[in-house]
Length: 254
Image (cartoon, rainbow, N blue to C red; front, side, top):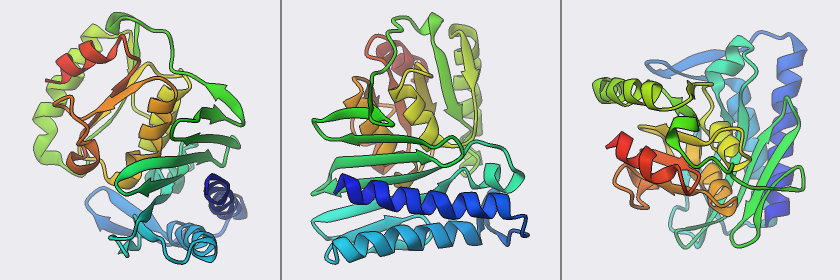
């Protein structure tokens, strides 16, 4: 199943790369304020779903562009064909394909693929996390003061901006640095491989964080919602970090 996820993610990545190098004008439309989609998102998503359907015709999908298909199926594929669309539109080199498999509500397989750098992050429940087939672990950072922390702006939930600004202000004063690159799936993958020590964001969708969350837990990190519970897939609020940094980060978010 992980092999199918990898094949699908790589196929989506080839579509994205071909478009980024082809020079043809992108067809961009706005789904809502500050939230855009291109024809590349749709083509990449269909490519992923076609590969999965051929292998597993009875499986369901939760996909960013297509919505839910057979959501009561035993296996669900959670797909973001192009996480970081706004970056992609502007040629800002930070975007990825995210594919996760959920079995009876539990995340079991994950792929985050950066087509620009040809970096393939993979994980299976109980099997560890990998970057291009090399085992990865979260960093050994032990203190929030020393942590490089990733984040994302709540651009879809501007009503919570005041809360976020308070969190950001606190983190800027209590950590060694804060970074906002614009692709949550990659940010979470970077926590898994130690490039970031922690990450938080408000108002994410399931497809933004499903694969990244499994990568982090399989790499030895911790992931939760703002209450420290495992409801982040429902609430959309996620906090992730190394085991030593996690308690301080969670307290800071509160």
